[in-house]
Amino acid sequence: DALLALAVMVLGALLYYGGRVVLVGNGYVAKTVCSAVFVMGRKPQSVLDEEIHANDPGILRLVSVDVDRSAGRVSSRLLGLGGRTAVYREGLGCTLALGLAPLALAERGLPLPAAMPATARTPWPAPTGAPAPALDPAAVKAALDEAFTEPGAIPSRRTRAVVVVQHGRVVAERYAPGYNADSPLPGWSMTKSVVNALVGVLVREGRLALDEPLRVPEWATAGDLRGGITLRQALQMSSGLQFTETYGNPLGDVLWMLFGTGDAARFAASKSLAAPPGTQWSYASGTTNIIARALRHAVGGGDEGYWLFPRRALFE
Image (cartoon, rainbow, N blue to C red; front, top):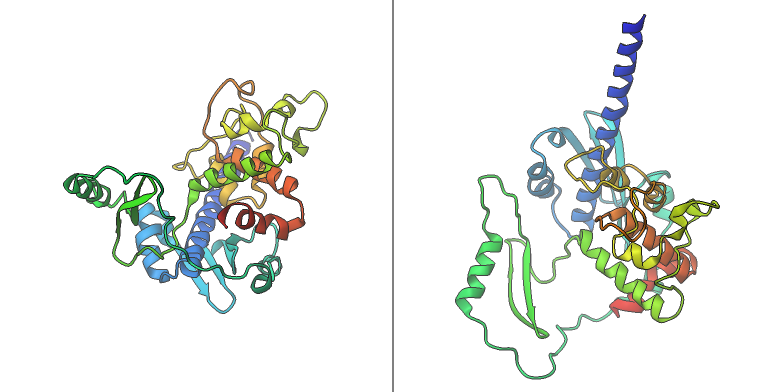
């Protein structure tokens, strides 16, 4: 009986964790292909070859992909299991449909032609002040060569674009074949800097305060030490929250947050403290999602107000 119970427990654990691996893999593939096809304008097979299979030559090669251009959707399944769907919305990019049906997600969009008219493309801002010191062309070329050179037989850098700016001037740029200055590229964690800049706008306007505790529903219970985490500590990645930023582990916090749950901020906010706030630096994408939710509440105006705020407050 004990052996049978143990076998059942082991089988259950394998099914549970195996299922999570499948869902994370499918979510990653659906989101990556969706963004590349509908935002970047790339061909699905090139994305699979250059991004998905290059990142993981093993299990992800078993994931099948269906691109529905008319509906703006990409669905993925690993050997027919654990289907995930990413939905493209004009002006908002691609989002995994987690916790709601793809059609319901597609309907949560902006009346973009009216709300977000296209803005004219402007050249790089004209520099001010004295011209920048002359650069050594050979040194610049060597730096660019280094960025685009693969150190091993299996591509690991996969550099798409390099643009060098000095004192407000573009002094060098180079692009991989098939890419140019107009090619949209995924920002990934560079978005953290954008979020922090948007927080700075709201701090300047008095709608957020750096040294006041973040108002997070998950921490509102009396005596919860997480309720003392300030906006400054969150911005500086010293919240003290437990969070594993390990991309090689499909069961780790960051991949499950990105590809397994539909509410990233809620997932991150549910984590317990690993250290007193403000005492330990630990890079965590979950913290930025908590900040983004606080930003959303400070901006107000529902989805539309939040979606339009970055453009109105920063990009324009």
